[in-house]
Image (cartoon, rainbow, N blue to C red; front, side, top):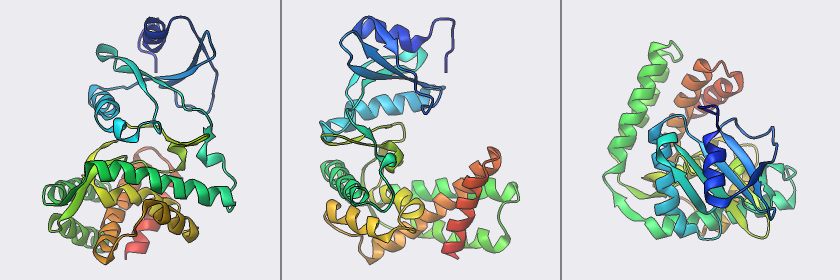
Length: 278
């Protein structure tokens, strides 16, 4: 994403670290640039389209990332007016390049659990009553959007409303959460690393498992076991039921976004999760 004749990401990088060159990488989304300085050290420069998500991600690097010291990039600089920031690149390779079914994949999930626990332990507020009603309101808004778009039946709306009530009435652990915690945002090298903090905020601790539960672990239960072994504990029965209610959020958001973006894979994922919850 370039909003002027001079790319603000390059401007920021040159201001902070001097001369840089762009490392072409077609796998990156347009808003991201991979750069290298004169010594070959790599960086990522990112520009958000709006202020809210930019503020949230910069705040995550300043407030929550220190709990993951050594496992997330360092924030090098930011520029508020262009919603642009610069971070160091982690050494290693993306975790989603690990061969499915390999021992390395199990190890990656074990490490993912271990590192996520560091963040959760450092920021935990046990059995908070503040998180559930907010999540119930979020789910209600997505249900309304799905209903207005004709994406759910009356029975499905009723099912989702049950999960909305569960969220509203349940005390749950609160913690700083990544909220897009899955292999595409993990890095493997000398140590395990985590990218993309733009969704990070205080939320229900168990919700940080939802992407893995509904996008990865259904087809490979052994990865669930590896992750929780690294995390140090499995969800108890109450938390497992709560995770199903987070699946309701996963399902309806995928249906709505899949429809809006004409993304058949995302729509199919939402329908699959909704069917599981029935």
